[in-house]
Image: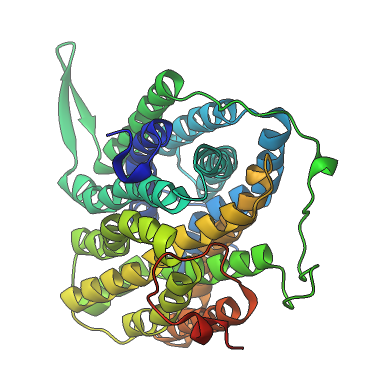
Length: 429
């Protein structure tokens, strides 16, 4: 099992722990919009609609964690320690998840979502950097793909189960001879808390920091740059990959805020919405590992270009659909496209990252993805006022721009052993 697809034992252990945490954390993406819509919380809205408030609450996680990721990534590089950042982050996630059950106002949701954002900043760049540190150029794609597959299994299972857990409530539990009533929302929040704590135990026992020297910020031969310092391209490749990750994330996150509108439009319930939301993730579960491994043989750039092109029609289609199962198919197809972008982008950035600086380098991509996850719900919450198709047309346009950027501004980092698309076609500018 250790050498399955060339995957390191530590990566498998880390992937298992992240999968556990992601099950509970992804509950909240479906549960929080339903929680707000149930009128369980109230308070000042400052003239904003309920959809806009939902978008803000969902967006806060990405805004906060993305803003802090460069800091935590660099700190983990300088100290040579990743594990402690992950453990602290998991404690914060568990705390915030439990606290949702006590929320009574919108401001409570804002506070707890900010806390989760801080946790995400501690966990996301450090776990990706760990994978990169443990991998080599020959198996980096396989390691990244496998890690993302396990993580996304959790992220996919959560939304599917979340709607059902909420709808099946309230629950009655016998505790010490007393019947304890538990709402569907409380059950979801407590489950998210439990999965974060279980992940804490798994990482404490199974993960260790790889041996590497401490580094200072000035040791890095590559700092953050917008323009390519070599003069070969216009934009820096890491910056370009960050933009592409941002565009992809915006497109896939448009869906989450529109739960009530989509349910009414398609005449469906929360369970079907959870399935549709998870369809994107399910496609990536099936494809992340094989695509990641394939990039070790066929190169990274081919998959990035094709994936961004496919994101255009699969995103736009979601704004034109009236059937629940056709929506599921569109989300799944969008997931196929996303699988061709996500792991290959991280892998290519890992190839470029200087030794000992993977936390700082990869945090550019994880930060950009987080900002995209934040902007997507905000954009859909406000753009839907101009028509249901408008948010999805916006996401499709960003994907088209991303395809052009990858094609013209990113070079292949390895010599492919096999060819899917003629190299002279991809290199033509």
